[in-house]
Image 1: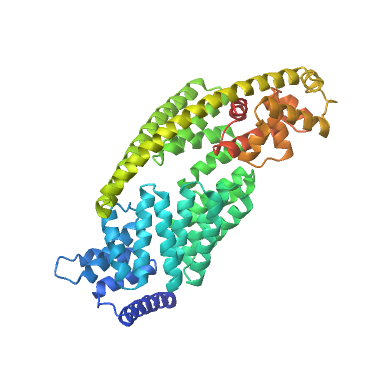
Image 2: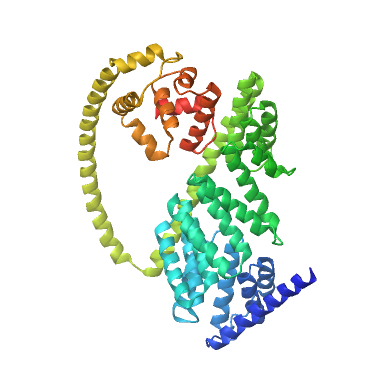
Length: 511
């Protein structure tokens, strides 16, 4: 223990010395020792120490060199980002970018660009955010600042994740992980692995997600602040095992902490112990955590109470669910208004800074012309679409009549559920073709959303034409319970939410 403590102290001193030496060698001004130490603490991930040093510095002398004042502001904004606070001082960040573009080392310019990107991301301006990130990334690569480069990759991955461009996330998070490993930064490696797990989960790559979360737990366990990562990685890992119906592994990871109560709720629901599931759903639903999660918990609890025949409890659950839906709607509206206001302020700063009033008038004239063209094109498109819809309605009506009068449909309706009735591969292909014609490419649209196994696809086709679950089970050599589990799993695949077989059926009928 003493040896590891001495190593940490030696590393901190070494980073400080290197930072000061680099500043002197690059011809930078001599910064106050507190700022240099704060910068070193931030780079090595000791955010409380950096925060404390910056709070103690508090410059008041306006006669200080501009370089010192800019450096202080750069560090202050950096700590604001580390505390996960919105970067709403875009004018100040733009001043930092302009200053460091021509003054000081390029690493500081790259950091200022990174913070500008984060500020744009906070107001949902993805194009500007990505532009700043890529500019900062190229500078960090040229200057070989691996710590900064790893952080930029992290932020770029988060940006893609936020805008649901999930396919691009794993590569960026893998680069983030590799750079953190080169830097010997175990904390960032653990966070990168955690983010990879989240991205792979969304992409429905369960094996990769499980491996990533396991690695995050393994790396974080040796860190002083392991409790800030390990419980959350384990919680997501448990949720994955429950989705995969590997309940034994899920049970092994659950501990006595309240953090796993929602895992327990879904675990007991999965193994059909509804009393225990109801207990934990009610517990997490009454625990202030996240209004979006609470809404799901109350809905799930109400559905369970319906199954158990507890009408009063079910009505109470649905009342809570309805109330939370209203609250979520208001919250989303308020959030949207705040974001619109932030975007407006950001655009105002840009307009005032760049002084583009003449260009703006020219653009407005151009926009009016484009708007007129857009209205004309929209009207033409609307008439064309109505004509196409009319033709499509006629085609679907003919396809429906052809399907309903087909020998295949008659046989299915007559014999579905009988022990000796099965469809061969050609008949399944014929059924799929009919359904695509009648329901506007139903199977094709499903496969564009998610990858489905042959069995899952056949379940969807039979549900779509109104075949009962018991009959589906007989036709596919499955038990009725297995068909119910398949429907639950597919509902989550298609909607991203846990649900019941009945919800899946309703979803498909309306799809």
